[in-house]
Figure 1 (cartoon, one colour):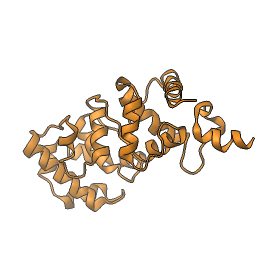
Figure 2 (cartoon, rainbow, N blue to C red):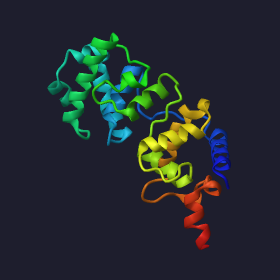
Figure 3 (cartoon, helix red, strand yellow):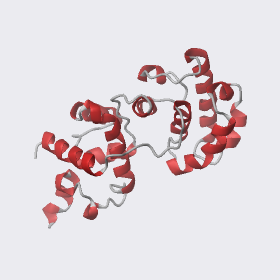
Figure 4 (cartoon, rainbow, N blue to C red):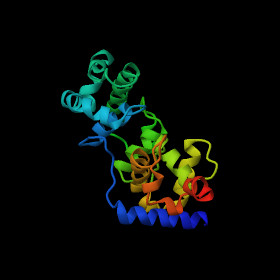
Length: 216
């Protein structure tokens, strides 16, 4: 099976079986999503969603958060991972939004990465989810699933994975493909015990063919 054929089969399966796929982070606007994605670093979406309602209620805009302090924001997010650093990032991010972007979340990936707490992955998430740009955010799920399925070849880091996926996935599908791969990794192709026996992508999966078919 060629890589082109593998991509074609896998993408067609997702289109037919997962026509709706979106972020599981709760948000109602671009600022809330940016806050949630920053908080989600090395933390589950479920945990983030538990604390954001109160945070969003008391800090509904960049202007309000920018006028606060890291110590105050910390009290809202102290139950998640790395709350001290994230509180500093959130306030700094909000202040830069206000100073440099009129309080609005920019659509440009390079501009997004100038915000405290925003790396390439976070910038790609915002560009993809909010602005529907062909940006592929590569987290641990996307990195793992892409490798196992055989969508990437000897990728050593997220940037290599991102470039290979963007090269091979039609531009119009990149925003939703990001969610397809994340959700597949979260619920099916899990890190420790992938559900290969029930996975409907096994016919085109490199991991399945090398770990199961060759030993049957």
